[in-house]
Image 1: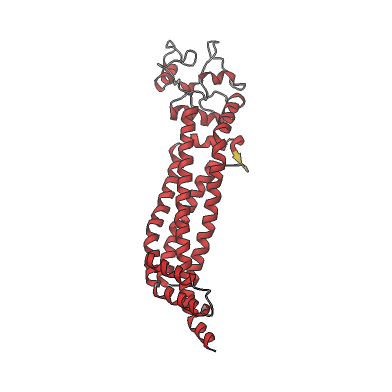
Image 2: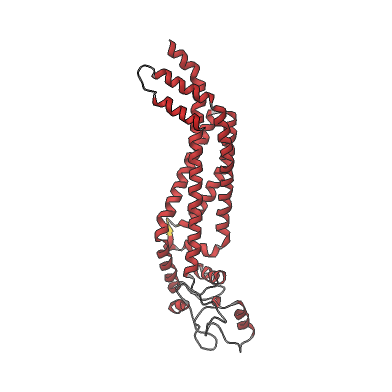
Length: 306
């Protein structure tokens, strides 16, 4: 392949010398024709890891969606959305879609290359170009919003704790339900610290005995939750939270770390897919040129000698 590219470059370099322009173009056609088997084999071989990468991208995208869905849903808060869509969730969906498309069109590309069909290869190249544009847009979206996402995330969650959180463990409120799940999933309480919920304007903190809760029930350790229900004499962790009966670590560093991990996965997958597609696109276009040159070579020679 290296020697083929070197010969092609050398031929193209002398392409415009004097009156031999027509003959050099003919030489390019002949050389491309001679290397069609090599190109075909190379494209088919390279399609195999590309298809595998597409399958891996699908798996990683699905894993991101199902690993910590409640944490991921926090990116759908109104303040963090772009055109009413979560930029992080949208990027994950783009990775899954691009991976599936590469998986399908990679097989199509192998069949088209083996059949040496310029029409099928043209369709394959067009689809690769379209998917490549979508991936570049998704990767750009991730890079642009990654720099400001942490600050916006902090502000949005803290604001929603004040204005949306209702403190009920069985709440159907979007934010309350997911922040309760985040407490249990990440073993944390509050966002900045455990005192965040004392600023809530929508949570009735008055308990049955007239005292005030310091943290919601979702911040209590599992055994503390059960003891509240069964043994009234036990110390209620909602009134006196400490390391023995409740989560005390803030959620902010854990949520940030998780979001950063997802963003890196999305950007890395998109960049890898884009690179593989760009490489395949170049090889497919060269193969198309060789096939088209072969099909028109006879007419070209006739026109040249008339």
